[in-house]
Image (cartoon, rainbow over all chains, first blue to last red; front, side, top):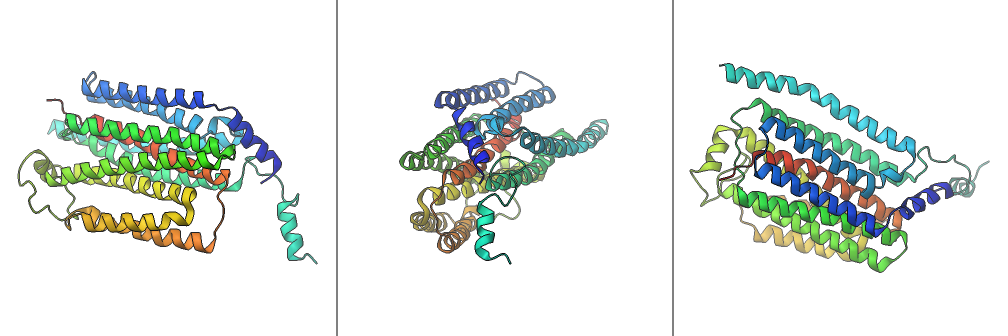
Length: 110
Length: 267
């Protein structure tokens, strides 16, 4: 490993303190509790609930990737290449959902 | 002519240009593996969502106890992520004692998660929810909610056991990975003991009876690695193991709401 890379890693760790980790952990617990509360009390219709729960899960995963996996402190191009490719592939999988809705509607009409 | 020594010096010296991502190759390798693994889990989660959306009669069988248990499992995984970052921080300070302690705490949380999940699987199988590949429980239910679900909407059991089983396998591998990084060869007899316990203490109809052999395979793989390439694991190794562990936590952040919370039945 080069000295530059070593410096970057230690710099990344220097940015992070135990207090910050604890805050991220508490935030994740609170967001999970909100999810359980919403589902348990069935606050929304299933379609809306799916959207809300997924939005909360994306926030939670951003916290985990950014702080626990240190990606926030990595070199810019690395962040871009990793996340852009992943998001593009996952978004492509959404192509199946219109078909799922079509099948569901067909059952309802019949 | 370039000698082998020159080549080694060149490798460790200035012979190669700096990494494109300004970090060490092990970390880039792990990130690339995690990207490919996210697509595996992504495909499974999308398949589950497809089945869920396309089937208006999708069952919602998870009652209060299941949600409480899944919430405790979520707490275990989130806490294990906290202990894991503390292990990485201790490793970067070169504090070997605390690194080992935090890694052990992470393993305990991961172990707790697997045990709770196994307990839940066992309960569901006894109540009649099972894959056709699973043997039926001898005194299992022959009627009831889960038994009916397994017959009327087989996709539920299929997607549930595939998704959660794949995740449980990842958590188990993660616990073993951390054990190897923390305790090296001393961890090998522990894997063997857990394999024997899981194999001998589970009934023959349980998927964990034959699933326990994953631990035997892990023992062989770890033994080969540890004996062929014995080394002291550095802060980089702990950080790379941490990336894997956080990924396992991250995947659960999607499985928990999609599989459990979206199938909640409050009575």
